[in-house]
Every structure is written in structure tokens, then in C-alpha cells.
Image 1 (cartoon, each protein chain N blue to C red):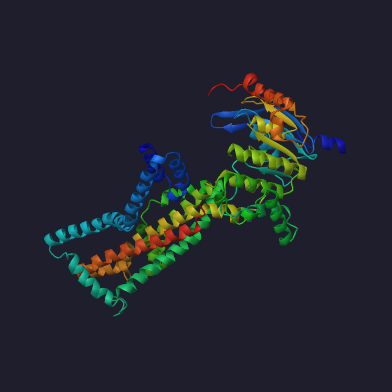
Image 2: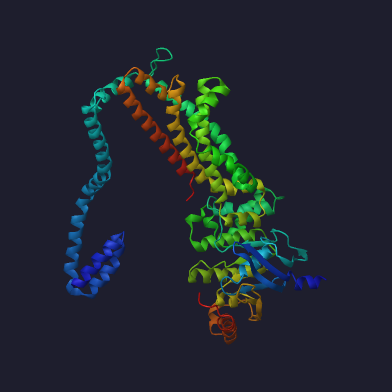
Length: 312
Length: 267
């Protein structure tokens, strides 16, 4: 009797759907008349316990999921408040939040080139990143494909890439200023340089990692080079390519702040530097949060796009 | 001459094959000679690492022999061609294409002079032949291993090959699915009448399906140890054969070759 009930419990916990257990239960019950009422009452008991606990368990799961990140953010605020309390001139979370409300109530005002709303600054930075990044993608991805496909090209470009890749993109700013004779194209150029390496390298790695099985299929089916590229190489490299794109946009967004600090004009990086000159520290902290949030959104958007393209 | 060609539809002449590896030259095959008749079903059996897949890849044209000559229908084999279709062990379907698109990829290449409608009809017919019409819009990861291998067979058959090359086609499948697919393959071979070369390590599969079984010695420098004629009448039925003395004799012949005379030393 007790054996049966233990078995049943085990099985129930193993099966996703208790309803599939019903016929077997019935058989075992029929075999042992004595056990019948006991088992039946137990099923009821299990059910009455399980049904009401479903809703609380969902909220419990939500809290379990939400508590660690909320705690993390809360601790950040505490540490920030403590440091602010002991540092002259550094505003705490409350002061910064109040200032942020003011800043974001008029994001798109314009009082001449050196005093524009935070919205304009973000858009200016985003457009530079967009331009530099797009050009890097247009050149880097096809180049990565060719490097991955042709051994000669791979060995030819290897020393150049390994030499130039570790260089901070900002080191290229003076060269950009010299060649383009203007600040805006120079900062786009810096973004281009910072974004191109991950795309070249990841695309090339992706091409070299195309499973030999697929290439054998291509050979046996005698596919044309165009079909090989569109039906085999491109889809199988896509996930690697998206990783490259994600890394690139991350780096580009990191670099734009520093580049704009140096070049000036409109942009979130210059805004930080300008507010430092005005000693408006609240605005600097707001800018840090803005940069972080925009970067996070860019990353999440690309993860979403990458998911669309994954076939698994 | 005509008769000669039928008798030696696929010809392997003094094939030697060695690979350059990091540890030096590895001699895989040594002096392989084999004539395959038109419409014949040949199995190549041997322990793993004996180079049986290498033989298949040579006929497929994926490898070029170090020395020796290969012919198919009187023409030398240089590269893969549509008259020699391959069914890969791990099905090798492209995961981003549906079953239909996977087969269509082969069809549109081989029958490139036909209209799209004709090509689509061929693709449909091939999927129907392996009983997968209902799954034609599914992706490979949405169907079972047995179904994937059926698509692989459909892709090969859709090319209307003269020679069908099967590289351990059912090796990755469970025993029940394997048996079903073997039965279906037998029916398909009767329907299409094409020549087939199959690499396998399954003794029952070899005896059940083949007209001749090529048994290979262990590598390196593997050779053809013995060729066994399987003169069981066709069509064959696995249940009837299980009791058949001739079948069991052939089976034990192969087993004796593999486990007595050319037993693989325990690794």
C-alpha cells in the first residue's frame, strides 16, 4: 500500500503531465483494492495543495528572479551616496535624479552649437557611430569573407591585422584630423577603425569554421561559387558575423565618448567634457548613465537581430 | 565493348592512397582493384579506420588517388559529378534550408535546363519516394534522425545518379529505424535500378542488401581481403532470411573474416 503511494509520487514528480499517469494509476489501484481509498484521497490532497500554490509560486519565482539585480542596483546607489556624502562637489543620487528630470524635460533645445539638449547630443553621437560602423561593416565583412576563403589573402593580411589591431583607435585621431581637415569626419574615422577589426576577424573565423560536411555537399552537388556563397557560406557564417557586429558596436560606442571629448562639437562625449569645464557634475553623471543605457540598448537590439538569423 | 562496360561500370585500378599528416605520410589504401557491374549493390565492410570511406570518397571524386585509375561508365573520375550521388553518414543537410529546399538545391543544379516547375516536380517526387511529402516544409532540426537520412537519400536520388554512394547511411540511427530504412532502400533500388556502393560496419545490413560484399583488411595500407558473393534471391525479406541457412552461412563468413582472420587489436 505505502509502496504504491510512494511509487505514484515519484512518477508524478517525474512526469510533466500527471494526466498521462491516470490509466496506470487505475491499474495499480484495481490490483490492490485495499489501497483504493487511500490513493484517491492522496491525489485530492496533492491537488488541493498544488492548485492554490500555483499563483504565489509564480510571484515567488518573479521575486527570485528580480531580487539579485535590484539588490545590485541598490548597493550601487548606497556606495555612490556614501562617496558623495564624503566628497565635496560630488552630487548624490537624489540631486542627480532631480537634475536629470530637468535635463530630460527639454531634451531637444538648441542655444547655439555649444549648448544643445541632451537628445541632440545623443543623436549626434549615434549618427557618428552609425556612419563609422556602417562603413566598417561594408568593408570589414566582405574582407573577412575573402580572408577566410583564400589562404593567400589570410596570410597576406595576418601581419597587418595583428600589428594594427592592438592600437587604441584614438591614436588614429590625429591622422584623421590631418587627412580630413575636420573634426567630424575624423571622429567617424576613429569609429571606423575601432569597429572594423572585430568584424574582419569574426567573419574570417566563421568562414574557416564552415563544417567540412557542408563543403563536401557543395562539391558533390557541384554547386556554383555563387550558390556556395549564398546557400552555404553566408548562412553558416552569419552567427559569427553577428558576434563581430555586436563586439564592433560595443567598441564603437566606447570609443565615441573619448573621440568627441578630443574633437568637440555636438555629442555626448563633448557634452561630458563641456560640463566638466562648467563644473556641472550632475550632468556628467547623467551622461554616464545615458551612455550606459544607450550602449545596453544597442547591444540588446543586436542580440535580438542575431536571434532572428539563428536557425538552430 | 558494350558488355564490357556493363560488367565494369565502376572500375578501380591499382589504387593507392596516402595522406600527408603531421606525423608524416599515412598510407591508407594499398593496391585496390575492384570492378562493379551496372545495377550491382556492393557493400564495403571492415573495421573502423580501414579506409572504407576513403574508397567511397575516391569513387565520389572528393579525393584523387595517389596512384591508380578510377573509371565510371568508361570515363575517368576527376571530380564529383551528378552521375555519382553521395548519401553522407551524418545526412549533411543544410540546417537553414527546409527539406524541400535541400533537395531542390541538388535538382536545380543537375537539371538546370528544365523549368522551375519541372524542377519542383522532381523535388516533390524524390521526397515522395522516401515518404516525406508531409515534411517538405520542415527544417532538418524539426525532424527525426531517420527522417533526416531519408531527406539525404531523396537529395541523392533526385539527381538521378547512375551510381549511388552510401557512406554508413544508417550508422547513426537506432536499430528499428535502421531496419525500416534498409527495407525502403531495397525497394528504391529495385525501382531505380541504379548501381550502389555502400560503406558499412553492420554485417546484417551488408548481407541483406548486397550482391557482393567487399571485405577489407585493417589499415594502414588496407587491402581488399576477400569478396563475398551474396547470391540470395531478390526481393529479400529480413524475417524469412533470419531462418535461412544460406543467409546465416554468409553472415558467419563475414563475421569470421572480421573477427578471426582480421580481428582488430583491442585499442
